[in-house]
Image 1 (cartoon, rainbow, N blue to C red):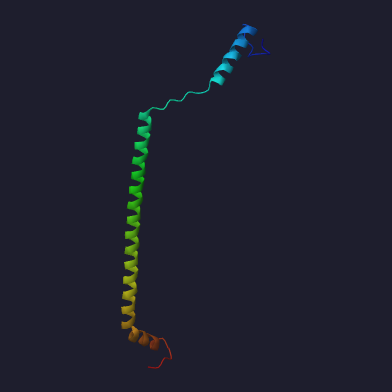
Image 2: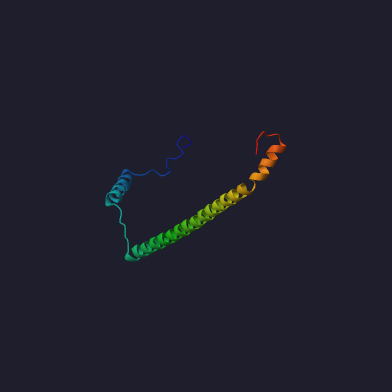
Length: 108
């Protein structure tokens, strides 16, 4: 008995083994039966539409937020360029004076 641990203590008759195999074959031949009710279809349809609407709302909110951020960065960049241009026009005389002090040979 120790050599074959999975051997049953009570021997199985050939008739029982044949009956079991026949039952297994009949169950496999029978196939599967799937039942889908209208309530299930309605539930999953409503759930998918709701999730789709939520996803679309988040997508639109994110797009609006990104557009606002881009507009703010653009206006900030334009403002800094405009200020730099004004500042540059006012500092020409100061730059010439600094160039003279640093030993530049620029003539007025």
